[in-house]
Length: 261
Image 1 (tube, rainbow, N blue to C red):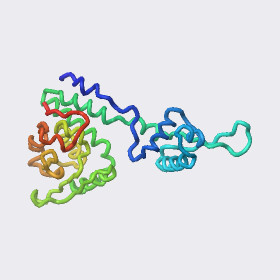
Image 2 (cartoon, one colour; image 1 turned 90 degrees about the vertical axis):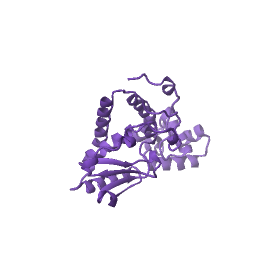
Image 3 (cartoon, rainbow, N blue to C red; image 1 turned 180 degrees about the horizontal axis):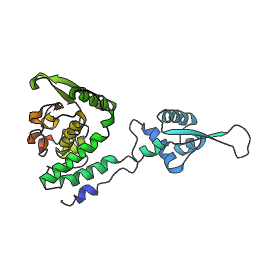
Image 4 (tube, helix red, strand yellow; image 1 turned 45 degrees about the vertical axis):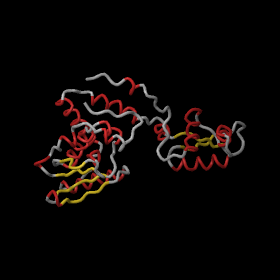
């Protein structure tokens, strides 16, 4: 295995990720709670330099999102109604440390460094099978097409645009069409993630799956055809070769993509 690219490994990463869908002002409030612990409305107002009304509006949004929770505390003098303080929920604490993208890119760069084709293919197959493990219990259906539709419903839950149709060009075999790449940063580096995704679908559908069209070749979508036993493995030009330089702008990265080994 080649040593990792030192320039890639030394690129700066974010110290605190902003949870998906959270407004920037709300993220600032989350960061105060993360660093300083639970606080009352007045304390947050002073820390953020905004009015108590603005703080309450942000707390309401974050509470609805499940990121912040309220607790009651007795006042120091023991008189009056308990004071309310706000702190992060478990979800709020976990979302603040989500830097999986950086880790995924480093690990994928290491996988690309494996020179032995058989070892690399075996590892990609194991990755695909492991990816399937997260969905297997939720995929059901008596036929490959029914199970493929079940997979599509799970993809929709992840906000991935896709559809399942019978393609007359393949004799009516079911085809999963994905309109957005689930792993654009990894796919930009090489096609190995396409191979892993195909294996994942085979595991879930219980039938051979072929990558019949890929966005990295200029198409508007990726198509996975299920049930074609005569062409279970995609053309190597679609799945096992490097990404051409002409594709570099389709999935722009902060890091600099290279051709696959």
